Amino acid sequence: MDIVDKVSDSIIKASTILSDDKRNALKLAIENETNENASWALTQILENYNVAEKTKFPLCDDTGIPHVIIELGANREITSELMAQINEGIYWGLNKLPARPMAVKGSGIERVEQSCGLYDDPGMMKPVSFLIDNSENPDTLNVHFLLQGGGPEIRAKTYRVYHKRSFDVVINEAVNWLENSLKLLGCTPSIPAIGIGRTHYEASSLMLKAMIYGNLDNSSNEEKYVTEKLNQTNIGPLGFGGKTTVLGTFIKIGNQRASGVRIVSVRPSCFVEPRKSTLIL
Image (cartoon, rainbow, N blue to C red; front, side, top):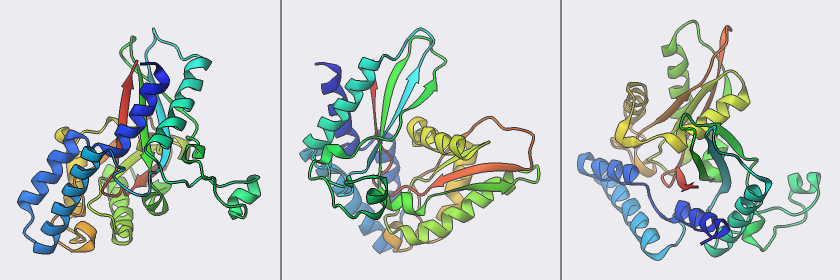
């Protein structure tokens, strides 16, 4: 199997198969949930996951925008041929799903105004510019894929926080943003992702890497804190109330500079996210 086929399969996997840590978290939430409506909603969500994996149907009708993070060690390199193969593989993966046709036609202004309609071809949903991340292992070349849906994107936020030399100030501001957005999201339980950096680009990149590298089976104390705070809101799955507003949290903290502000990026992922897969090359 060549790289194009492997990338195509990775896109399909990200869209149709739930990660083990997320399945474990959902099963535990079902066991612990005491709200009858919330318990019913969680059970239906798990059934949706099982059907998607069995039939290879997308987990959600909003099949998302492809994001690519390339994890690169010092002994490996990226060629223009590999970049072209990744792009081609994404194109065919979106068509094979099939993904929902969502790419907008036209010039820059026409795309903003959505005045020329949509492409019928699902593969025209081009990926976001690739993100390159350093790996401590010199022999690593991993290509990570995320499919990012529109609902969480609408509710996401990247902004500055005056930290007052306190991590609690920063993280509680992020919790407040998330509480407000999760009330409006609808597709709970969420696994929110948080990136804390020096610039808006860096914070957003860290938020994406939090989703790629995060694992609910191995949460940090900071991640557990955010999860506990958000589960006290009683928003619950699909807004039905109960203990399970979020299944867990992913946080990635980057380099900081001497400054009175920290730039924080938060994404209130819907219950099918993060939709991710990894191709090891």
